[in-house]
Picture 1 (cartoon, rainbow, N blue to C red):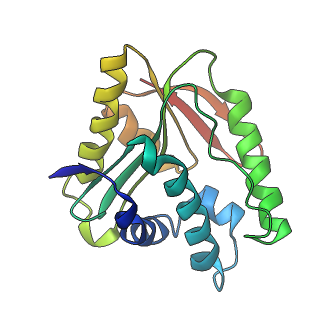
Picture 2 (picture 1 turned 135 degrees about the horizontal axis):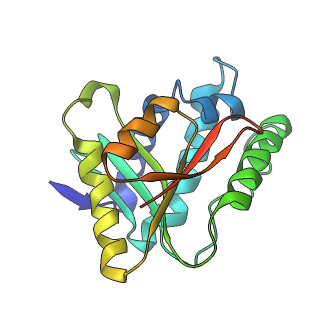
Length: 181
């Protein structure tokens, strides 16, 4: 059953996302060191969770095994300040990625799918699609488009099959596809 995440779901959601994104190009661009990836990715995903949990825009299934963190329209993107939380070199890469994406996002209000991940032990159950659609339903109810970005080439096909289309392709600081539905 799909649920809206509560503060007490934080650890399960963060653990799932750290594991799910271990090979993601964007996360490995920002946090390239195998020895510290899990530590700093957990800080990042915890930050994303904390910024959205009270807006009721995080949907999960099976105790966080699949999670979609959506950003409602007209809210600040969660690229906020992690100064002191992650090393400066990682913070610099995070800001470069965030600035590139922000510059490529379309004008006007939209729902933004910032994070979609499934714990590898639960893939193939279509749970990512289920939690993604909870946010898409909300966007549709608001009469607004939905936007996402991915740096994972395989995800482009996944999202296309779910009705998304590529609206912008970036090459710097790494290949990034901005998609809209």
